[in-house]
Length: 466
Image (tube, rainbow, N blue to C red; front, top):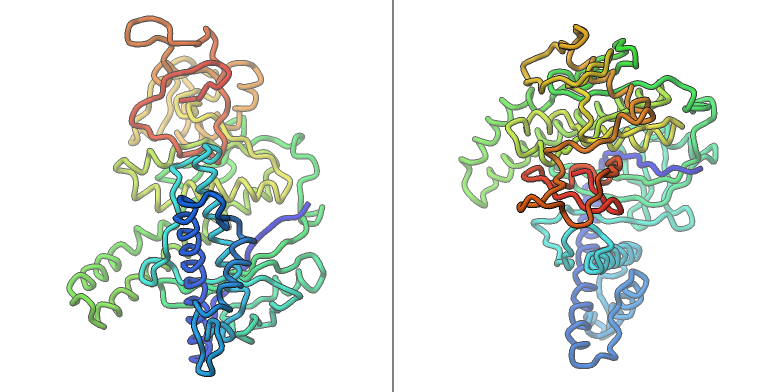
């Protein structure tokens, strides 16, 4: 079993190397736009002549662009030779990878038209220098990308110094446990060049993986706002309480000051550019702190626990409420995504509880479901058995009990406010059976449904949980 991961480093290029990097960025944007222009021309020509072939895949676009860049339409040099004059100044892989990116965008557009891909189909648009992130990608063709102690070698660019140490990556490459696939260079808003090295690595050593996750105890993870996450077992014993750094809240005062200074600068002036870069550095710092925290927390949980249960939350719907700033600062969705693939790396099992499972209102001791708790109520009190516990600990314990509740047949069920079995006339909806079958919501479906109004229940063959 192999896994794909990425190592990101900060580049420290010289003045000449920075100019070369900007040329490669422009070449990638130029190749993408030129390939898109060719596709548009072919589509217009096909309206008059149906026999015209339109290049659609990445392989066809590479061949078309390679043929075009040698024609007089691409330009003529001082000696009268046809072809793209500056094509030798950049690596040819930059052109090819840009064509591959357009091919993927066209395939996604076709999948959206065929309803085999979720979302509204959008035809690719031309890239703009001012709007799109400056980046380009290179393949590791015949080990053309090499990593040293504090530098990385890229085709046509040579050795570029790095700010961070590459020891973990070099150790994996030296032992033959990984190989480099791609290297993506991008210019971030904080004014720095970064390189993301995508590798294909072997699975973790058996000593670092869980032997049999099915025999390990189940723990529940309840995400909150006061506390980022509370981890508890089935008996209601709190195992861990994770506090979030909340970098946005800590940097809000500085961000407001920088934003106010940016709004006072004249449009198009150098002072406005400096103010924009200063504000971008604050945002980059916030993102780095949040990303580092989520990586550390998800890795620790995947290593230490074999079976984890996490609740599926509609983050898109919650982001439309007054809690949007706190939720985004806690990175709930990113935490769930990272925990999903890291549990596979370490051989753990991640169970996603149904979105409407009443983990907060349910008593972890007797199973009785009480009334809805307000956000300021931090203690759960069961009116049936008198059990009292912390709100987050009780919810985490209920999540840990979720597999047993499902196995006992007590869940899933459909809440009355989330599904309708009768239409407006009081009659049963079309093809609705008396017992509805509800499936668990997967992570790739999480947050895609709006919470403005519930959907009508449909047949048991295609029942949705909403």
